Image (cartoon, rainbow, N blue to C red; front, side, top):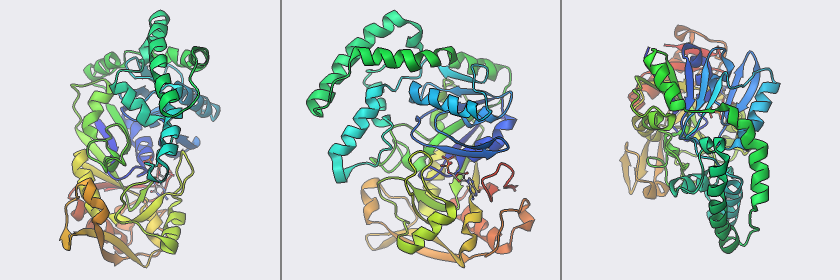
Length: 424
Ligand code: GDP
């Protein structure tokens, strides 16, 4: 079996965590390759209900090695808190099943603070950040103004570098935002408190992955967010600050020469979107309220109500292309069971013309949805486990979506539980 990536095709929250939880039992290593603790994968299995933010969803399977690759935003504080929370619920996370790349850059306490300060400065023009410090972190990473996890292993060199970075960062905190400066004392306290906890997990995960590859072990790459939030290919500037596409997985994991044979693009049977930015297929009012309630669309990290609407075939086809998806997992089909008719955004209307192509971000605000609808099935499908047992209307909806996206839907999810899945 080849390596596999599980990625989001839309705006995030498609149900990637439940797919990784399901599929990771067939893999030896599960790697997170980008992003930080700013999103949440919800996983429901025999051990309980978990909201994972930074930990790979493979932690639930014995014998699986989980890796946080060099591409992630490594927030030692959030990671340590998450390790403790998950361990307290009976899922041990130790250096035996989690390793952190020595080349993962550290998200430092001021990144979160700066995120909040900048959103406050932007007021009604804000990006809708989760305020976890991700954008300030990635800009500092690319300016080479942070340190790597491996630096925690060399304290003398670490402190010399951190001193210079702190001095530079205080210029921004004080002169740009008029905020209080950070002190070396508080930084030392933070590193002693959280960096120390993460030290035992740090290693050269590139070497670990190369060795796994050489031994024929199977590697699963787990993404955060989705194509439309990808820094380069998404709805810039309402994107995240890293690359959520599968093509980045080998780089962000520490296996730049690695090959990915299978890319499972996760698509929700309808649309949801957290935060600001254009969202062509959006529903409002009572219609939106009903769908939000049916799908329980509230942020796993922030509890914010998500914006919702019917599936957007234009955005989804584009998202699947960006991912190079070989398979689609269609999730939350059960949520649509309450509708008499299932609306779909089949095309966009832009400048008086209909289009199947996803427009350049600057044009998205002018795009209007062109709706079509297909019959609903109006019955509970959450207990169905075989394709043939799905009502004809539900199968027709899946086939309609499959044709429009142009990629085979090989998994249909009808509930959050691990086994609530139909394999085609
Ligand atoms: P992720 O970040 O892509 O993993 O997605 P989230 O965890 O934020 O959102 C997916 C939510 O939908 C979670 O609460 C899951 O438990 C839930 N979920 C996943 N698949 C299904 C499904 O097929 N049906 C239902 N009803 N819920 C699902």
